[in-house]
Length: 294
Length: 87
Image (tube, rainbow over all chains, first blue to last red; front, side, top):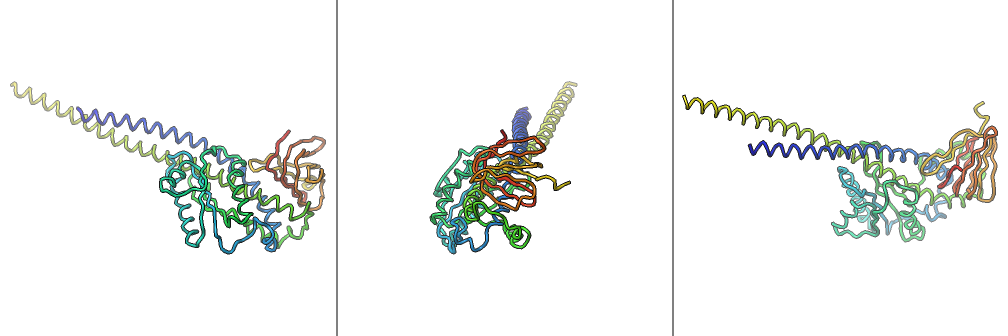
C-alpha cells in the first residue's frame, strides 16, 4: 500500500513541475517573438551605417582617427560579457562564460592585460564565485533594450580607447541565428573594423566613382559616425543576446516538459503495476483463506 | 515611371520609421535646411536636429529627427538617425 502511495505522490509532483515548465516555455515563446522582431528591426540601420563607414574609410585615414587606430601590440583590453539575469535557459550562460574565459586566456597569453565588464546576474555570480575581479557589473539592463543602454555600456570604454588607455574592446554575446541556434560570439568593437566586403565594393565600383558631395566633409562625418557605429554594434549585441536568451530558454523548457512527460509515463506504468500486484495478492489471499475454511 | 520619384527611407536603430516614395525631402542638415528633389547629386551630410518633411503628391509628412546622417545616391535617400519620430 505504502509503495503505491509514494508513486502517486511523485506523479503529482512531476505533473506540477511539468505544468510550470510548460508555462515557462509559452512565456519564452511569446517574449522570443517580441525580441526577434527587435533584432530584425535593428538590421537595416546597422547595415547602412556599416556601408557608409566602409565607403568613407580608407587605409590612410587609419592614422588620423582615434577610433580607427590599430595598435600593434595590445597592452590593455576590455572584455564586455553579456549574460542574462535569469537562469533556466539551459547552457546559455555557461556557453557565454566559457567563450569569455577562452578569450581572456588567449589575450593574456599574448601579454595583454584584461579587464572584465559583466552584464547580467548569471555572469556576475559566476565570476564572483571564482574570485575573478570585475571592472564593472551591471544587472539593471532590462529585457527590452534601448540604444541608451548600449551608450551607457560602451561610451566610457570608447573614450578610454580614444585616449589610448585601452587598446582593444571586445564584446562577448550570443548571436541570434535562429530560435534554436544561439552560439556565443566574440565581437571586436574597437578598433573599428568596417565591414570588409563593403569597403572593397566601395573602392572598386560605382560608389567611389559617384563622387559624393560631403557636407561638412569626410573628417567631420566620420567623427560623428564612428561613435554611432560603435554604439550600434553594442546595441545589436544586446538585442541579439536578449532574443537568444528567450530562444535558449524556450528550448530548455521544451526539453524539460518533454522529459517530465516521459517520467510521468514511466511512473504511471509502475503505479499501475504495483496496484495490479496488490489486487492479485489480495485475491490470492482471499482464495487462500476460503480454501483453508473448507 | 519607376524613377519618377525619390525613394526614401528613414531608419533608426530600433525601427524603420518611414519607407516609401516621395517628390521632395527637406531635412535639417547640420548647417541649415536641405531640400532634395529627384536627380540630386550624390550627397552625404550630417544632420542637426529639427523637422524633416517628406512631400508626396501634395501630402506632407513631418518627422522630428535629432542628429544622424543623410545619404543621397541614384534618387535613393536614406536617413539614419538615433532619434526620429513622426509628428
